[in-house]
Image 1: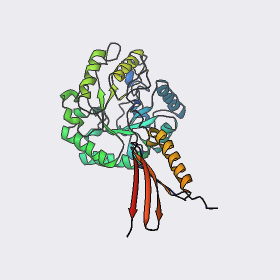
Image 2: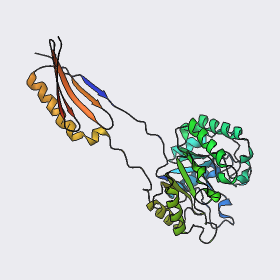
Image 3: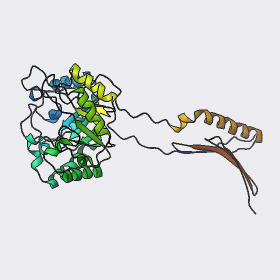
Length: 352
């Protein structure tokens, strides 16, 4: 009895899925109307979560529960904030390691987004450019495998030139494959209306503005118009700041509206879960599974009728495949193959 032998050669082009911000949901402003200054009240923002004085283990758990109850997938965090301007406390990265708290967040289903330069009130922006670049490199080295993305800084146009921000973006992108975002003062291009600030950024974190009075949520028509203006730049836009109360009905309704108008994600509350997610790419073997069955049956039949032990060869990429077999008799070689576009290829070669 002739032994059956099947040789299978499978070559796949495999891409590793990197973290991205499409569909990001965070609520970094979580103030309460019971607080006189809303976001400056205790637990009014997620940004100082990494501070050792942010809260006890129980308080941090309660805060994470608040964010998750608001539909959040991510959490916005300062990597440095050396003043005491936030009730959550100061953040001196040279005196502490963020590993434990970042692991804590990931384990609880909140993916960290690290903001590397805080707003001007903290004073960290006054460091030299060399110090800022070194700090970026240090944070990537220490925590890149624990964070999903980086925001270069908060309201950078108030303290940095276009050229400086471009340099910060370029350096950070040279250090990491994670997305890099730019956040400016309210308006497309910030208060200077200079869109060059976004050069090289993977995402725009858009501050809508006009949310400091009334119901503390931006005007809907203005917010949609600003989002659409930003989208014309060809960079994905996360609607990041449009309310002081991320958990309010008004904030959630505006978040839903911005999602419906093309936002890649929301940073200030929403009701919907689907918002800006990229459609899942269909794998080649799912796309061509019917043809693969047909081709497999054809090859099995070919083997059966020839009664030869034929090797079966498959060559595949994400977008195409070819399956076939060859047989050599003396100085003759015969082959047949089936391609994903329906083409059957017969080959013959003769050595002399």
